[in-house]
Length: 193
Image (tube, rainbow, N blue to C red; front, side, top):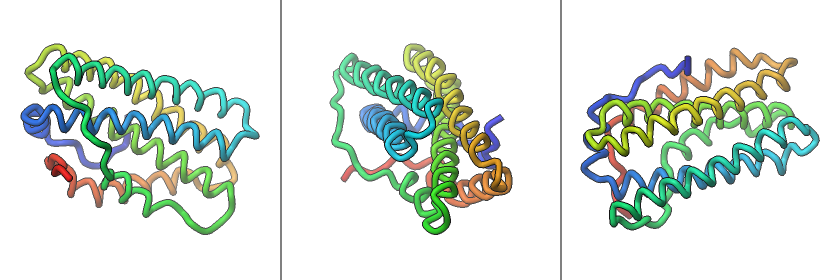
């Protein structure tokens, strides 16, 4: 369904489980960035009322997810660590078209966002299926569906507003690019700054 070329190795979940404070902190900040991204899409494309409505809903949901992850951190007696640079997202940002029309930039931003949501959904599935903590496994199972909906929303808007562009070709380019970089992030836990 998601079109990702490389699946996350299930052993990554076991590695993540050994460093829950780090993983949960990174997850919390990813939710915050996702909310900010949705609001940025609104700011730059406010002429599309349907898009504004859906992006505001996504932003609210992402903030709720941030809160839920923070609750998991507190429940476990852990600390929300400081936000740090997200190398994966920064690598994806390098693929955004910097030249071309405003429409091209908008469509590329929708695909960039869809790809991040797709990878989050896929990773949440790996965590849901492989964590030994039943509470966290259920937590990620519940979040997985939301990420899939966000992925579909972003990609749907790329297709809707990019009808004059070759959206499917560009989407395949995004998937190939993500595949080329994801091998560097497959099983690694980010190092503390």
